[in-house]
Length: 277
Image 1 (cartoon, rainbow, N blue to C red):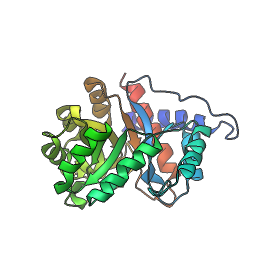
Image 2 (cartoon, rainbow, N blue to C red; image 1 turned 120 degrees about the horizontal axis):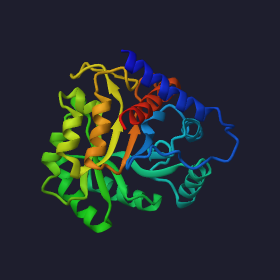
Image 3 (cartoon, rainbow, N blue to C red; image 1 turned 120 degrees about the vertical axis):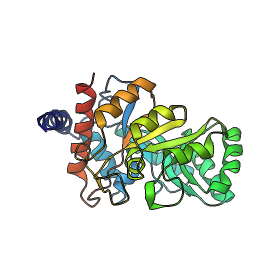
């Protein structure tokens, strides 16, 4: 208990130190963790807020990578709208590293998603394609030379409940088709995300970090460090497998006022990184 409190306080001090900067000053380059992996934010965290509020939050928390969600940049956006969106990100020193999750229930939706990613200028799509459409996704990956990270959703929906299910459906497809390992949902489906990261490392292209209260469907999302996930072991496994992607916080608690939870989670995760070196 004392160790957890120390890590939380350590991380919060680091995070709130970033928030003390003048938000009107020129954004500084990312203060990286010293690891191969990066720290980012999943756009879904800001489902209740506009892009300006999302970017201001990232800037204050000193987070510089964003997975772009379509409620901030619709799939139907014009080239001019995409350029304006990217200019806003650049102004806050934020890199849009991927788009999604994007649900794909038809070939037309897959076509639209790949063209969208191309116009946005990213080469990673976080996706949820219907199972029967995976051969078509495979053909589009070969055509565009993009990576597709299939987002798993735990016991809440029949598609891709955990990392094992994603692996079983993609292992014989193009190696550029893998998973977005949502460690909270993986845990809620009774799996161990630490073991799954090790087992499926070759197909883990993106990671959503969060904590949960339990290992069943009844488990709820909450701030990192307060739940059942073993974050010290997870960070050590990130190092062991040499993960070079982004660990993006997907904060899903109190989404109408998530900001203290975001700061706590980012701070705790940074504290774990330092404490496990």
